[in-house]
Structure formats: structure tokens, C-alpha cells
Length: 398
Image (cartoon, rainbow, N blue to C red; front, top):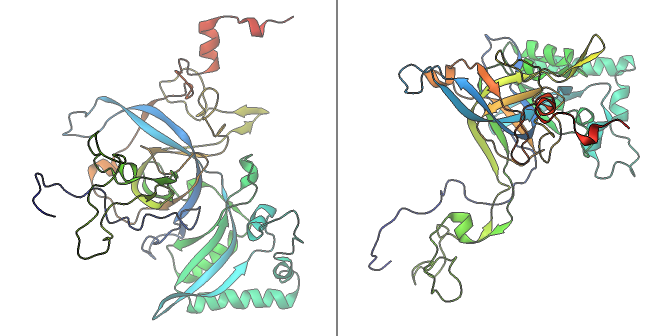
């Protein structure tokens, strides 16, 4: 560059290059937390579906802060987390080139929603997946082979991961194909891990077995896609002056005469969004139970706090826009999180040990907003609306 009137830092981070579309729709875990054999065996990941956002009121407990003992309003994201089902176990051995899968053992019965993942077109297929492997559990020879594989895992493997899938039938979504992932087991000896996996075959594992209240977790997923965008939107470069020839949402100088190539550091137009990202330190404000039956009644009271008079569910009036109603267990996270509504997100235990006050803070919610998220919501529950509006014409009995 020749003489410049102003110097400025570059636009956009180079750390996220190349900005291209993600290879997978589901967030892939590149690293699992460090194993600690002194702890009991536990899963390190879970999968959830983004439902939408709302806000909460809570009293801050942060000595030394100006907001200490004051009420604060914070945005929260709701992720629906139905129980996941364990259908297999994989053992890995360490080699000089990294981990290598030694043995995989599948459960006897694998649900249809899980099998759908192995087909492009389920309805026209012969549906033969796992028919051979499930016969192993029936005869003695096969059982011996399974026991031999599990014994080999216990003897040689260093890392044990379980194969889990989500339960789409609980979500009432158009999609019937489950999302499958491998989740590492941490804690205990290798033998304990293999026994844990074996015991949980075909069992559903709720989110409460993996995460707890006030825990900080990481979210891995694919961001909302925005298609092909120019430099102003993609790199947030300055717009050129109004009188510019041939458009002003451009970069004026895309490099010097020599080297006579365009450098990779120069902002260019291209794909924006639908990138694979990991966000760390998302605090869990609440783990809520789904709707459940008790004495022949449906209990929906999963968003009430001590300050609420009436029962209310987490669903805003009219449901979450572009999602519907959350009827299964859910997790409430502080702040926003990546992805579109209905997007599957991978929740992972944190890789760090948190010592800071703000991460260890105990959270007690005073109020969860359930007014309509579609327009200017005025009422928290349908009962509030009925009490305020009085009898309506549409409710009149003929």
C-alpha cells in the first residue's frame, strides 16, 4: 500500500478461515473432556434441539459487582432434550498415528428411527440393516463372540465410546431419521466403562444423567446459513463513498501489483453462515422436566418459580415460533446459541475446570417469561388473558 491517510486493523478474523459450508449438519465433537478414573462412569455429551428464546428475571449473587443483590433480566435459550438411546459401544486403542477403532458391538434391538439413518430412501429399501448382527444375540456362538469382543475391549482399549441416537418419535417433527453420534465415556476403569455401556444397551438416558444445574457446558453445532454474500456483509468492511463507480459494497484495493496474485488475507465475497462452530461456557439456568402424567392428569408445571401463583409451562403462548411446543425435557441456557430453530446441537461437558466466581454462581430464577413471542405478548398464560379480556364472542356457546 502506498501513502494512506488512515491505518486500521483488518476486518474479520483469519482464525475462522476457510469460511465454507459445514460438511455435516450435526455438530461434531473434535475433543472430549480429559478422563478422570477416580470419578464414576458418565457420558460427556448429549444432543438437543433448539426451540427458541425467552427472558428471565433473577437476583444476581456476585459480591463486589454493582448488580449484586439486584434483579437482572437476561436472555435465555431453550433446547429440547428428549432422552437419548444407547445402541452400541466402540473401543479404541492408541496407535502412533492416533486412536484406532478395535471393536464395535451393537445392541440386539435397534429402533427404526436409528436404522433410517443408514438409508438414503427408507421406504423403497429392503430394510435389511442389522438383521445379521442382531441374530448374534440369539444363538450361543454369537453370544460367545460378543463376550469375546467385550473382553478384548476391556483388555486392550484405552478409550470407550457409546453409540447413541436421538428419539425423533418423541418430537413429532416431520423428520423421522434419528441423529446418531459416538459419546465418550469418562470416569472409572476401562472395564467399568464397558460394563456401563453393556448395561445401558437399548436403555434411554435422560439429560439429567449427563448435566446438572448451574453447570457450564459447550455447544457444538452449525450456524444459521446466509448463502453467498458480498464483502460488506461477510467481512464487515467499510462501504465505499456514494459516488463510487460500479457499486459501493466492495473492497477498493484487493492487493498490490506484485505479488501478482490475490492474497488469502484480502476479504472476498462468498459463503456466509452454515459454518461449524463451538461455543464455550454456556451456563445451565434450569433443567426442566417434560409433560408427564400423574393421577390421570397431565402435569405441565415446568416453568413456575417460587414467585408464580399459577402453574405454567415453558411454552410461550402460541408455542415457540417456527418450532411448536416443547413437551419433552428441556435445558435453559444463558444467552443466545448458534443455529436455526429445530437445529440439532451437540452439548458437551466443558473441557476446562471452572474456578471463577461467575461460573460457580448459584442461579435461582424469580420469573420466566412465557408471553407470546409472535408480536407484542401481553399475557403470561391463557388464564391471564381470559381474566383480563372477559368472555369473548368466539367462546360463546350456541
